[in-house]
Image 1: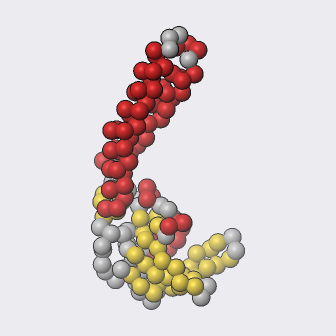
Image 2 (image 1 turned 180 degrees about the vertical axis):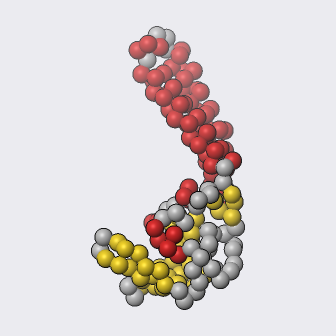
Image 3 (image 1 turned 90 degrees about the vertical axis):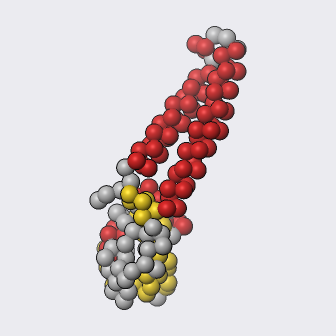
Length: 151
C-alpha cells in the first residue's frame, strides 16, 4: 500500500521539523559548546549526552523528511459515498456509536479516533459504503461494524 498522509498530518510534520531544525538544534549546539568549554571530552557526560541527543534529533529530522518526500497527500475534506483515506466515519459497534478518521500509518492515533487504513479495521472499512457492515475477528470474537455516516 502506498504511503498516504492527510493535510493535517503534513502540517504536524512540518511543525515538528521546524521545531527540531530551528529550536532543538540550537539548544543542543549550545549544550555541546558549554560542555566543550569544560575540557576533557573523554569523560565529559554532558558532552556525550548532548552528542547522543543530537544524533537522535538528526535521525528524526531525516525520518520526517522521508515521510514528506515519499507520501501522497490526501484531503481530509474528502466527500464521497465510500470509505477512503481521509474519510470521517461514524460507526455502530455493539450498540455504541464511534467516530474515526481513516489516515495513513504515520498519523495513526487510535485514542484520538485516527486509525490507519493499513490496520485490520481500516482495511475492513476501505471501499465500503454507508449502511454496509464490516466484520473483524478479535480475541473476544467476531465484531460487526455498521457504517452510519461517511463525511
